[in-house]
Amino acid sequence: METREENIINIHNFLPHREPMLMADYILELTKEKVVTSFEIKEDNIFVHNNELAEAGLIENLAQTCSSILGQSFFENPEADTKVIGFITNIKKIEIFGLPKVKDKIISKASLISQFENICHIFCETFNNDELLIRAEINLFIQEVKS
Image (cartoon, rainbow, N blue to C red; front, side, top):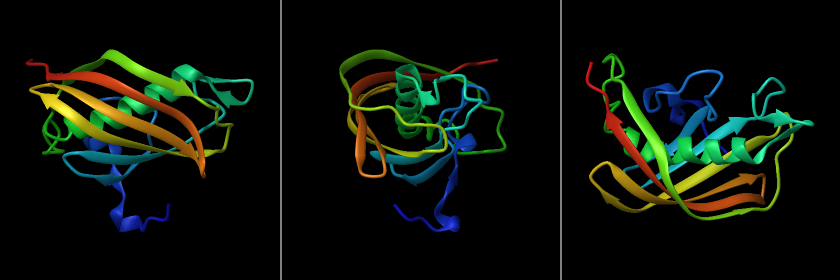
């Protein structure tokens, strides 16, 4: 997938995660129903074992990709000090076909199936080039935390 620099969205504007738990680098496409992210696997990633991103890292990457769909409504103003809490409430279906290696750049795609208030059901897939690594349907919950 080719993208031009001006089309890349800063992931920090849509996710509360920071290093070492940030598992997505850039948002390449974002609408109210769909998101595409990219993530380069680095050697010092906490989920890297034996030069591969472990299954837990792939799942966390998918969850963060998916949460960008719901999270965008909480982070519309990047200057605001918005704090949110979010978590996977259910993994309905998951299939893992392969694990990416250090230096691979994976692309994750998520599509909203349904949403009820702060809970959403999302279909998602991650690819390394044309190789499908993981496919899942997950439910996420995200809520703003009042200070």
